[in-house]
Picture 1 (cartoon, helix red, strand yellow):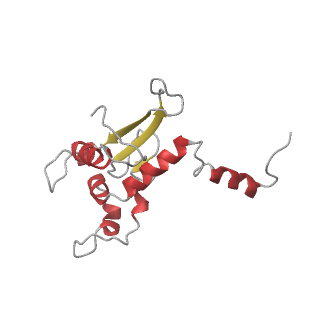
Picture 2 (picture 1 turned 90 degrees about the vertical axis):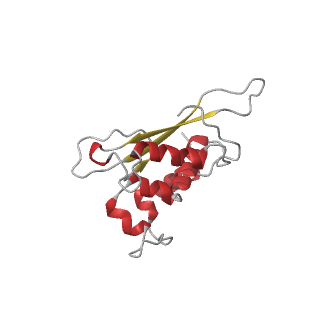
Picture 3 (picture 1 turned 135 degrees about the vertical axis):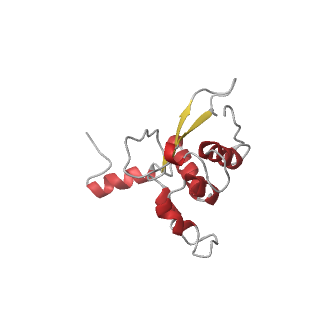
Length: 162
């Protein structure tokens, strides 16, 4: 066999290209979703991770635009379905996964993408105390606001099910 890499570094570089390759929509769409979610302070607030609150707000309660918001990724936000097991600390999760289901009629070039967001809220933190809104409803509303009819993927997104 003839491989297009000879070292581990070359192999890893080959994999890194996948994130930018237009042929691998699953990876690039997940990256776009990640970026959208991590630039949404409303969502990060609603996920209610008290460990990261100082990354989101400063001591005066102002939005900390220089905070390390990416800490929420893989802690509270996951690019795959994750069903949490027992926890030592209260934590809420937003998971997402995508799939490509079918092609539009008479068009073999474009395809439909289905994005499923799953929200898991710990029973001990089910309501947002400040607003009185159930945490999963609050998170769902924020996702709808940021994605429904948006151009995140360079074409209009449409909510199919809530």
